[in-house]
Length: 194
Image: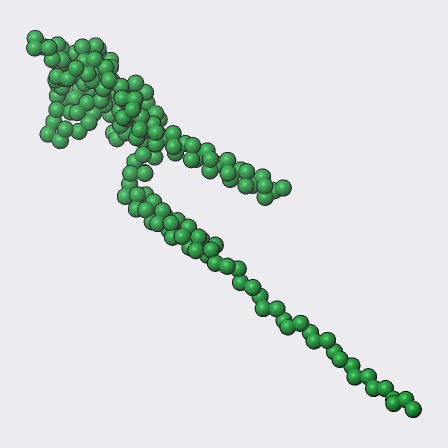
């Protein structure tokens, strides 16, 4: 009875872990291509309180013409390295040629960003959802230790599977049975009759 209950618990935990893994894969890898949203891991504390370090930011497209003060946008910073930034809009200016210029600032920063970002595209990426702490898992999975470890574990699993298939195909060995005992013959002599 205990063994059956233990197996059910282990099976349930493994099924739950597999379900969570598949859902995370679909949400982070497949969803953006199919449903048109973007995901990014918050790497800094510049938005702490709203978006903490290690949170996943889910951004959806929004028409540039609708940008307002207070929106949180994910954009490529107009600096040499072109890093991606997720900050709040603190000022919006529309130019005569139809472009939109925004000033941004991180909620936890004391001063505005040292640039004004000019948006020439028709859409921008606005933060729609924040998934707390999930980015830590994504960063761990992307680390070289985990990636190489997964390769070695997968390789070991393939080797073990191959060996189990090979061992499973061998015919069972028969034990040599001891030779059957020979019947004992008893010599019976009879006296010649007269």
